[in-house]
Amino acid sequence: MSGFFQKLGFGLKKTSQNLSRGITDIFTKESLSDDVVTDLEELLYTADVGVKATTEIVEKFTVRRFEKGSDIAKIKEELSRDIVNILKPSEQELLIDKTKKPFVILMVGVNGAGKTTTIGKLGKKFAEQGYKVSFIAADTFRAAAVEQLAVWGSRHNLRVFSGPAGCDSAGLCYDGLKEAEKQGDDIVFIDTAGRLQNKKGLMEELQKIVRVIKKISPEAPHKTLITIDATTGQNGLDQVKTFKELVDVNGVVVTKLDGSSKGGILLAIASETGIPIHFVGVGEQAEDMDVFTAEDFTKGLLGL
Image 1: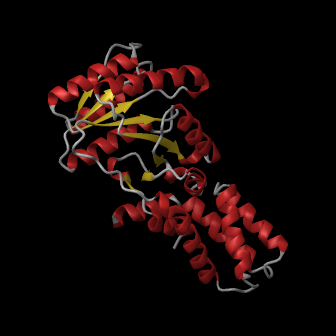
Image 2: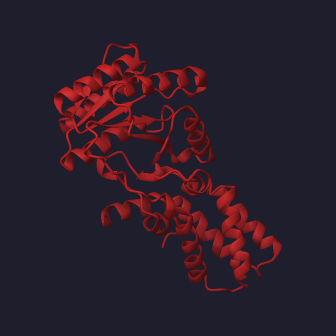
Image 3: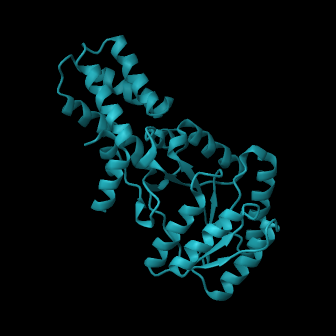
């Protein structure tokens, strides 16, 4: 985990530099006047921390009444504690119920968020833990997604179930799950379309997939994960809320933290949705994704 923590810290450098520099500037100016409170709010908004989390943090800082010349390390320590308290409830391990076989994980999210790559990375991780893993390529209108899954499958010896371009995604899921049962798979990841610009069509497609899945296993999907691109900032929070309306999203994976100055989006997601954040990603390689922990993320966020 130490290697990943270093990558996480480096990936969050844009956010941490902005926050660290901003905190230093704010608390070397003057005592905690209304102007400084406003400056702190703006700093947190810029990092896409979100309204609810920002309000909570600022209220606590106002009570503490830091003065001009206060030790910056002490201020960061207090801020770190506040951030961890916001994030901690969302720090939940993704547990695979071995009594549910196959354990079906439905992956949703907009095109470009890294959904298909995330499936590949998580598939590899679980396969290394001894699970028999397969993929269903149900984003049938995007040939690149099918090809991408095929590459991950070939690279790590994971079976990919796919169909002809443009075929019915729900029907493909049905056939794919039947095959997974036959093969004795432990975990099945289902890739889905992310054409959010056609919300009605996407809703109908996803809900049809869920209905078909339940014909095979009434409790499935056992997990519905949304992949969020950290560089989109508050749009990522909007996506979580939108997909939550479409299907019962109950887990989040945040990608591309290595290219973002908006790392605070995890606080917005945690404080405003309460949905567990299971994994974070900081690069293209499989080892560049790992489980989310509030403490490690906060250290990276503040450059501690």
